[in-house]
Image: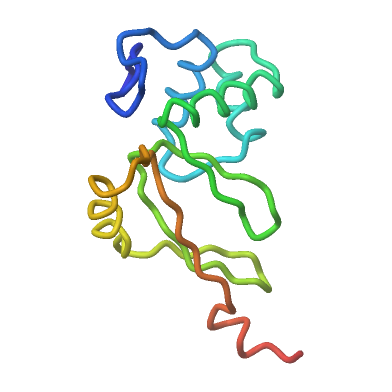
Length: 140
């Protein structure tokens, strides 16, 4: 899924991404699940030299282009994924495990909002917090 230009979501679709942003985006596109910036830095380093601060800057720029989304894990760490991975979770507050939902329950709402509000929507997040089945049966 290698692409050197911005997606149609971007305001600047005729410009190429800088090399580090493209490397970060390519690495994310190859992952089946969201990664932290540190994990992503390790993946990109398999192909080129890059620092963690550069990865963070690239991720922020990619978010502003509407190409990358982030969500906070149960421990507060941000996890990044491509916009195309429209995934939502049930997250256990005790063990921190996240369980993906089978489908996006707000996709229709986003489609309804898109033409009716003066706002360009890049992505949305939805996460439910509680206790998973094993944690509900643990002694307190």
